[in-house]
Amino acid sequence: MTLSTHVLDTMHGRPAAGMAVALAGPHGIFAQGTTNEDGRAPDLAPANLPAGRYRLTFGVAAYFRGCGVTLPEPPFLDEVSIDFGVAENGGHYHVPLLVSPFSYSTYRGS
Image (tube, rainbow, N blue to C red; front, side, top):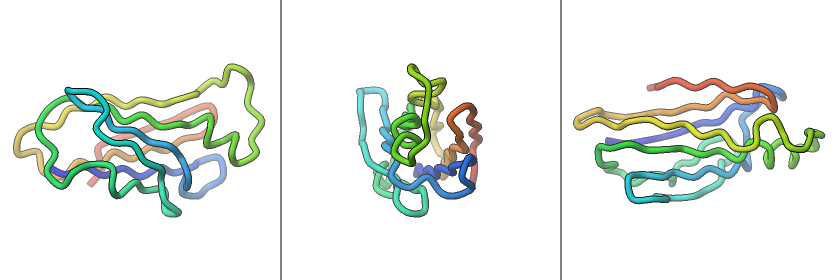
């Protein structure tokens, strides 16, 4: 199985470049990285991800503060975590995040 993610900044209408993202698996943190100029983290997951439960965590508040957005303390969304399962022979998993300082959505993409 393979995994990819893509973060879109819906407040500004652009990819969320420079957002911290971490992938945790059954045995703890798998990998950490930062989204590129297209909002993707291409080196986050290995080419063959084993079946199991995973969590993607995105540094939302730090990203928006870095864009100059004034957020309350504490921010409404600090980190967004998405828990998901990867099944045997599940193929490719794409987990996009559409985010603003006050809302987010996700789905299993292609």
